[in-house]
Length: 502
Image (cartoon, rainbow, N blue to C red; front, top):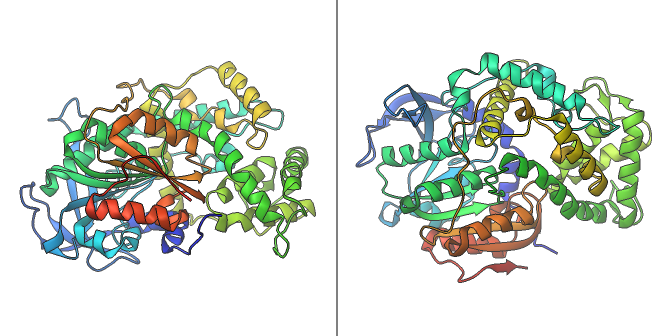
């Protein structure tokens, strides 16, 4: 059993959307310092916003909209920092690369950065940023219809397995992006995000950077290490994405097949444990068939759910709740409560609706950036027949996810041509990369992390952690994994070979 110590980072990860909201509210007040030595003139200002450390400072960096036309239009990248807490021990800058796509780390120097051990905080300036497209950097939007922001609608097939409705949704969303997205949307990509980080590095006056990339941030960190290998110092990649350059985001979506199969047995053990107030079955072996029967029943007999979006509890809402809950064992009760209510023919309380102005604006922003990156990184198939075949195979092999991981997203109707091929991760470059990976992770499963590990070759070592949930370091991992990563960041000491933290 993994060490399930109560890390403060777990609360931070579960409230990532709130941190993103805070980042959008970051404001600028009077300048407090000038530029970093050797960099362009950065006007550091005090950040304003809820829950921020008073030491956190903000600035902006101009970067090219189009890196093939570096003298053309510029956009802004908002950055933040908390300086090293012990200048005499300072080594450089630690970039906190957020997940997503559609995540922001502007608040992270004040948030998850403060969970780092003191020696790490002494060693680095902690650097957060809003990736291109994400407010308060130059912001993108697609102007999507509100109904298309619901996760339970996006890629899930209909109860009979058809992808026709998903394809129609993809076309409607892609059309909105074509109408409203402008030039910025066409220039969103993971490679451009990595290039932006190198402009931030230069503006900070750093010859090299260290980084802690989380989830989707592991892909950005990998691309940075590939595109700018000699500008990397100590790179930690936590909860790792499959870097397959022929599939990229399609591989990330498909990873839920393995991720759910790795994680659902842990939920089943918890949900059948005697004394659990949310117990749904007497034996762990009974939980899976119970869930499948209930999802099928809700497919055909959904329950009205006033105040929720959609306004019914159907099979796909149950399945999406399963995915959400498997990110963190602390969230298992949400799925169990839904199962217990639905079996009685009732529904749990409706989720809190988003604030009509602020929250929906942030959802629109994140959705546009997510779409731009997923669809601009690699070309997706356009044929409904292709997705139907894939979904049929997935439904047969992985009934818990009902075909969703191989379904069409709006990239199936993306109107823009691919600007460049995806970057291939290789073993060329310094050996300064540490991968940390939970054994049971619903979103970035171990199978995908192993693909990244093989691609890096001798450049990397991987620490596999016997734990459950998304996010290993200082989150859902264990003491052994945390100690190994902290030692590497603080001292550069890294295991000689791949290791297992039991």
